[in-house]
Image (cartoon, helix red, strand yellow):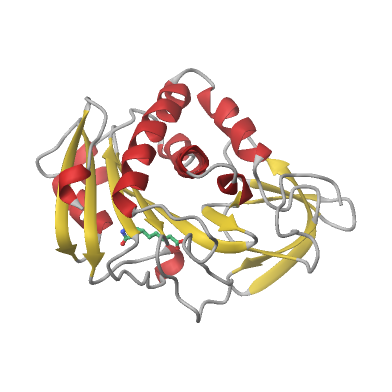
Amino acid sequence: MTASLSVPASYALHYLEEVDSTNSEALRLTTSARGEKHWVVAGRQTMGRGRRGREWTSKPGNLYASLLLYPKKSLTEAATLSFVAGVAIRQAIVDLAQPAGERINLKWPNDLLVDGKKIAGILLESSLEQGGDNPAIVIGVGVNCAHSPNDTEFPATNLASAGIDINPSELFNRIAIKFNEFYEIWMQKNGFTDIRDHWLKSAAGIGKPITVRLGDREIQGVFESLDANGQLILLESNNKKTIVTAGDVFFSRNSVPAHDNNQAS
Ligand code: BTN
């Protein structure tokens, strides 16, 4: 995998055949890497982690990568970088696999779906310790290129099974380019507004009924949009708008067709 990996000029690249977690490795780099942008890529992970403390199965064949950044923004603003990663991953797949890549949708907050099943996840972590008022942000990206778990609550699949053959190195190289392009847009004043518009164009379930699991309870309503911080705006049946900061989204049956690019159905 190493020989063919590349990143845009202002980034450093670290490749490890095996690591506990590329997010952990990127966080370890904060002791020496202040202010610089570092990509960490691994062939496999022994302790890959997902959102909400879940395990991320990390056998060879899929993409495991994390980006360490110091964006000089508040943590609230930096949290929207997961949307930058989402649109970058989707665009990378679209660029490499036409027209099949168009089947990829974005699922709030941080997932990518193909034909309604999860193919990629994003895990954003931060470290204030080394950054002071310039926190270190780590954006971890896992893409199921060749295999996927079959015991997840939200169904998962992989690009190969969906007929999209892209190897992890080729995908990484493209993601690194696209991420940099969208990051430059995001860095501009009100840059998240443009990213949010982009994200919404390929989002799954907009305008449709959804269930959001919030730890110990669930709420239902129509997925209206994202607010200025990337939080989900849910319109409940009593016409009450609820802003959801964190949770797991489940689509009602028939609310996300196999290929949903916001068309009314
Ligand atoms: C999720 O959907 O729960 C997020 C999954 C994020 C997985 C990636 S794989 C690379 C990086 N290293 C990790 O340990 N996790 C992220």
